[in-house]
Length: 350
Ligand code: GDP
Image (cartoon, rainbow, N blue to C red; front, side, top):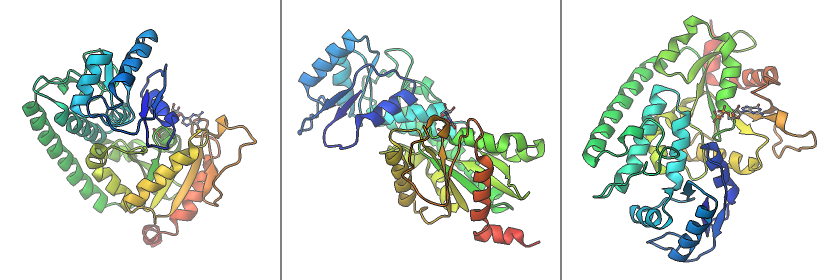
């Protein structure tokens, strides 16, 4: 993994992303160069150094913390002779592995194609030249080697499909009886695990109505017997690529319409504060930072007892989604905060 200058954030974040995508990191390179190299991004000398290190360590790919231009990718590939992966490709790969709903899969493919399109040259970029792995996975996999015209046609088809799903969901949502809780959080914080832990046992076949449309919305029965919709959303990441923001606009907008945000944070992460700040920043960017919020500090089973939480709020609950620890307390807190919202008040009227 390679990180360039000017960015005060640690290389650990890139390492975490690479591992999340399934890579094993064998070497980290931080380049402190003050000028930008348009041909090689990190400069030719450094690129040659990396080529030698990568060869010695038998690496399969080199991952860069920023987006690379088509020229840089081609030059680096020719010099290093390994698969070159830029930040957006890495993040899209993580999203491709995680997309579960039809809508999510379409959104990821759309983002992958939009990232790929300007990087296709006359010769074409053979992204899968070095075999399977990061950047070649996901719904867009078989399309990566096709030409621009084909990709453009595919993009407009996906956009139409997305619109269809959006329309039908809009209908469903407009008739919704229940308040909506949106799960938000950094990628890998444990949102899906929590969603399953909270809803699995309690989903009857009747309640699977929403599954057919979007598997990421489920009915949640609250401790007092009342119902809410729990909706999983896109995972947040620092420097979220604009292709993702664009493709996931509908999902992000949904967060704005939620009655309550359930923020899941990985309490065992070394980058805990950075991750939670990223989530707050995205929420602010999409103007969803004024919503009632309950924060679940997840994976406490991995934290030793002397750990002191940097967050101190009565709306913070320490849980383990995996081991179903303290979920009752979490649901109680959700109940309390949900009853403050307008939708829930309406719902209370017989
Ligand atoms: P998401 O990206 O936020 O949906 O995260 P996932 O639900 O996919 O979880 C990411 C990883 O964290 C998975 O390997 C989970 O098994 C793990 N995980 C989730 N919750 C817990 C927990 O409470 N404790 C531990 N130790 N691991 C967890």
